[in-house]
Length: 567
Image (cartoon, rainbow, N blue to C red):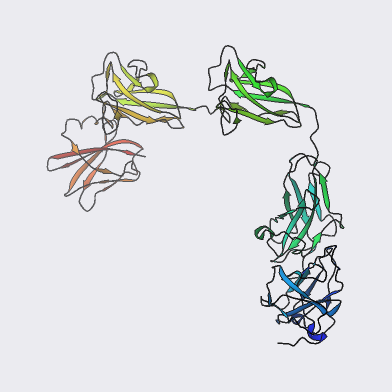
């Protein structure tokens, strides 16, 4: 360690920022000496007054030594930080002046010095008093701003409206190094207070980025400029932005500014629109009531324009905020908290800040925040096989929740082979229950494929799909199709078939010996046959057409069968 009892011993490299109040005698000619730039005994480096009362200097490290000191005017006026100084962090410095008999010692950088990196020191000039300083470390010389058009804004300075955010575009002279951040510092009270927003770049090496200054009220003057720093000003909640500044663009000291314009006083045409598709429209009509007509229920009648949509255009003051409700006859909307404000009567009013130009409001559903969501319709074809029944002379019918389970409302048409069909258009958002009816005899139903009808039987149930759909053929009162012709006279027991539905092959469960099999199509024709063993119980069905099939196995005079669907 060096002894600091001579002028040369008092010189060190410094990172600091000084700002002076008018009541202080300002120090002049700040100089720093640092071992890490091999300038311990030389003339030192002079600080530049690039920011008023916040002088700075930038040096490039040529050594890893970490000692430094700062002085002003003469070597007896010096500041010491009592130990260490962390880069990118404001640090208090204590002033010792005109005390040649006392040496406060030296200062150190806590962080390791990196050769060839740049160290920018900024001081807060508080005169010959204790103050703060910061050392900011960068991989390269701190970036500056473009020589021309470094700052632009949208809207332009003379076109910023009430509460309209301003997008500021910043252009740099070169790409930033990894440590540098770019900010817009702005104020709405002549720098009594200020805030910053960080400039965002699409890619790190881009020269142009943007930041958004929040919207302000009419009449407010906003002043701003651009700055760079190694400090995360948003995370650390910095208050002294001058202290942490590397470089800045201040429009030659004048700053950039705009005054938020008041909206023009006048009238605009606003068109209100409501969809009444979810309502039975009153014979009296549809009306618009609001603060503009003292919420008179029938003062402003809306006109039908087709498809249950009603419209009304009013001329409103551009400086006003109106509340309103749609009225069906003499029934006001209750309103919705998601898109309304409390009306103090247990409901909610809609609200509109009247724009500066003619405007058509989005279409909304009565009592809703958005347009009516009308259900779609899908054509669903129901099919029943009556081969296990003697069909009534009255015919076959479909009864369900869609026709209040009327036994004869929807007649099914015979399409051959005792199969009956009926196609209905159903709401795609609904779930329907139904039964087939033979004459006036309803299916009892089956618990395996139905839901309790609360009358001792079971209804079939369908969640209506979004697209047209044909239901699988089922046997009257059964869950699957009837047994094909030629199979019904054989005593049948249950057979396990998997997977369901099948695609390329099916497996037969619990085959314990060589077993013959036959597969029948819906017409009762044998379309495939062969043998199964306990080692080989899979059947290739890839050559079969998609549809409904029945498989029968025969072993030791025991016949088993099951149905499956190939798709």
